[in-house]
Length: 587
Image 1 (cartoon, rainbow, N blue to C red):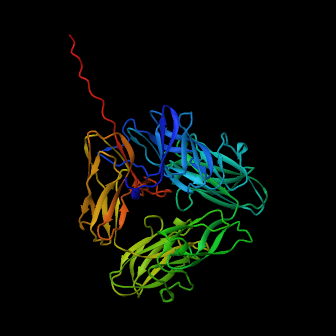
Image 2: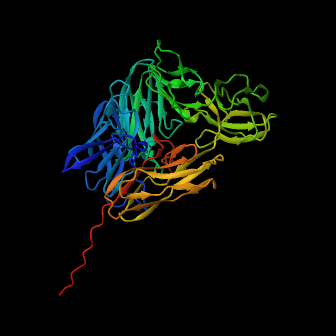
C-alpha cells in the first residue's frame, strides 16, 4: 500500500499468550473483498466498548463487548498515539490515550485470520471521566457526582434499568446535561429528567432536535442537591413499552455548569472573509468576550462545516460554511415587496419571531444555473420546524419543501431564466420566538462524482478470483474521464483498474481480484479510489454508516453518527484449507 493511501493506526498482536503491542503507522483497516463477506464462523464480532469514552492523556480499562473465539483477537485503531494492550481478563483491554490523540471519535476494529468485525466507536474526551456505579436505580441510591464538568460513562444493564446521579447546584446556576447513546450506535432511544430530592420533576427531555438523544438545560432557583435520571426505550422500537437494557446499551453523559455555547449569530461562517460572531450561551463569565471573529485564513481546509472552538467556552460549535457573505436578516421582510437582497452563493441567518411570521428574501441568478437552498434549524438544535419556498419575481411559487434529508428543508433547483427570484421561510406549525432561528445557505451546485459500496469487510481464498462492485455516481452533469483503482493489496493479490464511461450517470462497476494460490494469510485495509484522469481530482469509495430508511414506518438505522462513512475497507486473505485425507478402506 502506498504512503498516499494510508493513515496512522495501531495493531495489537499476541505472541505466546503474552501481550505485545505492535504500532504500525499505516491506514484504516476495513475488510474489502470477495464474494464472501467477512463475518463467517471464526471472525470476531465487536458490538461496542464499555466504557465508550476515554479521557485524553489517561489510561483506562475498557471491556470489549462481542464474540471473540479464540481470545484474544488482534485490534486495529485509527490513531498512532492511541495505544491498546490486552489485560489478563478475557474481554478486557487497557487503552492509553496520549495528549497527542485527537479529541473526538475514532474507529476500533477486532480481527483475526478469518475476518474482521465492523468498525466501532471509541471517543476521546477532554473532560474528566467518571464511571457509573450500580446500584443507582432509585433517587435515594443516586450516585454522587463530583462538581462538573465531567463525562460519565454508563450502561443500561438490564430491562427496566434507570440510572440516577446526584449533583449539587448553586442558586442561579444553569446545568447542561446531554446523553449520547443513539448517536453512538447503541440500540437505545434514551431520555433524561431532573428531579429534586422529594422526587418532583423539574425538567425533562427525550430528543435534542438533532437525534433521538436527549439534551437538558435547567437553572436552579435555590441552592441544593438535585437528581439527574437517565433511562431508555429500545431502538429500533418494538411492541413493548418499557425501559430497555443489555450489555451493548452503553452511553456517554456530559454534565456541565460552566460557560457553554448554545449558538452564534450568524449561525454560519464564510470561507471568503472574516465573520463576526455574536456568542449566545449559558453561564458566560462577566469578563468573557460577547463576540468572536472567525478568520477563514486560520482554517485553510474548510469543508461544508467547521468546528469553531472559542477560548473561555467549554464546548465547540459545528457551523455551516458558505461560499459567499454571511448576512443577518433585516426586518421588516414579511412580504415580497420588503424582501431583503441576499447573494448566491452565500448565507443568511434569520428568526421566525412570532406565529405566522414569514421571512422573504430575493436573489439574482442566471438561466441554467443550479442552486441548492439548504435551511438548518433542527439540525443545529433549534426548535423551528421550517418550510422553504422559491418564487418568481411576481410571487408565483416555483418549488417548495418542508423536510429534506433531515427534518430541515432543502431544495435543489435549476434557474429557468435570467432574473430576480424570491425565497421564503416560514414555520410549519405556525410557531415563533427569539430562539426560532435558522441558517439559510445558497450553494452553487457544481458537477461532481462519488462512489459507494454496500460492504466494508470481505474475505478472499488463496487461488481464487473474486469481485468488488462499487456504485459510481456522476452528479450535475459531470463529464470527466474517471478511473477506479483498488490500492493497498498484499503480495499475491492483483486487481485491475476500471475506466468509467461518461454515461450513464450512475453505474455499478466490477473490480476483479486475482489471488495467487500461494498467497499468505493477511488482514488489512484497502481503498478504492476514483480519479479524474485529466484533472487528477480524486475521491474514495465509501460505505455509508447512516441510514434514513423506514421499515413498516419505523426508523431502520442511525441518521447521525460521529463518523458517517467508511473509506478504508478490510480485506482478509484466509489461511489455506487443511488438506483432506482420504479414509483408509477397512480390510
